[in-house]
Amino acid sequence: MASTDARLLALEALVQSQQTTIEALTGKGGTIETLSGNAVDVDIAWLVICGAMVFFMQAGFSMLEAGAVGAKNVINILFKNVMDGSVAALCFWLLGYGFAYGPTVGGFIGNGNFGIEDIHNGAGEEEGASDGWEGWFFQWAFAGTAATIVSGSVAERTKLEAYLVYSAVVTSFIYPVVVHWGWGEGWLSAWGAMGGDDPKPLLKGDERSNGMIDFAGSGVVHMVGGFSGLVGAIIIGPRHNRFDVEGKPMAIKGHNTTMMALGTVILWFGWYGFNCGSTLGLSGGLGNIAGKVAVTTTIAAAAGCLTATAIARSLVGSYDISVSLNGVLAGLVGITANCSVVNPWHALLVGMVAAFVYFGASRLLLRLQVDDPLDAFAIHGACGAWGLLATGIFCTDENVQYAGYPNTNDACGRGEQFAVQLIGVVAIAAWSASMSGLTFLVIKATLGVRVSEQVEAEGLDRSEHGMQAYSSELLQHTEHGSQQEYRAAGSNKIQPHKDNSLAAPPPSSIQPVGVPPNTIEVGS
Image 1 (spheres, rainbow, N blue to C red):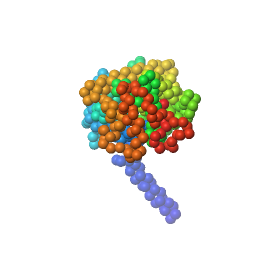
Image 2: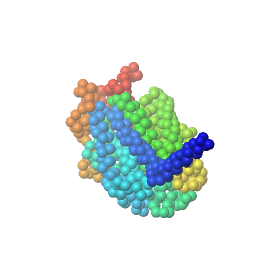
Image 3: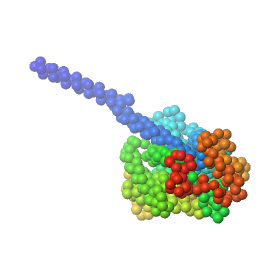
């Protein structure tokens, strides 16, 4: 009997304990609210981490561009990359974010939340959501990337103040408008096109259509930067030693291959923040999408690298590391739009074709005597357009639904999606080229866009910054060639100078990696 009483007392104690636990879990601050709050916190942390990875891509661009230009322009290109992030922060905070994500005005531009006035302490408390700080942070990093792409196209001959003005315009207005079109409530958007409770995505204007699919920005980010850079390169004109009197390209070597390779690897790393972070969270199954995006991104980058390497070996006759590095970037740009809506074998094809697109676009610009020192248009503009078109070619309706797009339809299967993507390519290219062209022309007529021939020959580090990245001994060889270039420069098409310091040396004389002068031809 005593044993039975003891068991009853133990059972009563267990029941009481369970009741206390249930009350704690279901009461104020209990499991339901706690889990919901944890999901929000996880999503916020994910965006902050991925945004920081995207911002770290500025270091990648800095290293890549610094290694690809001459030793006399290293400080200038590094300075521009730092300024891009800083200018973008203030301009995107004050104006850009409101134009991008404010309530739509006719599907063209946002109008509201300037200075992120709607983001404040407790803004999401009533709905149990985020206050919104991390959203601005993530999108600012993208804006800085779009601006930085242009710096490579206009490197080694552009006035610093002219470039800074352009950087402010692109992050305040040109880029945010395209963001609104594709990711806000704009006319191309897959996420509430034209605003209101009844979105009207292209082409059908209802749930039968998806609108433009650009998951992480092949068009919204990379095409804007690439086409803007192309127009800037045309208006500013080629470097004085880029083409001879017959219009044939003359090789200009990047001064440090190690920096170029390091920069590319940093960019590849940051791209996982770029693409995977575009899930905008991890909760509710978004983590699975992020995992898939990481796989397709990796496959496309690798395919771009290997394909570009094979192209260079077949057509040029050597394993050119600059082409291989650009192949990585081409594959990454190409997969960015469609990373969530294609299968792994599609990603392989996207990366392979991107390498051909990059190589062909680079050669085309040289034939047209357009000097793009970092091949920014070939990589970001042309491959960005390919990325949008590849989305329409390779997407499947099942993958679109898996990626979380709002409408259930067969737009990919019946070919409508390709038509929408094509419209997006044309619209983004036209807007970016026209607005950037207008901006550069206004700057040219007021501040001027190009340094003098003497400053260009001596290097922008001395004239714009009053210092050098390297000692005089290391720069002596470059300066000797530069002075001859300046004396021969009667026009943009100059006679090749007798000093062959800029000509490709025979294989037996190739310098070790990282030892200037290097043997990599920029714009290959």
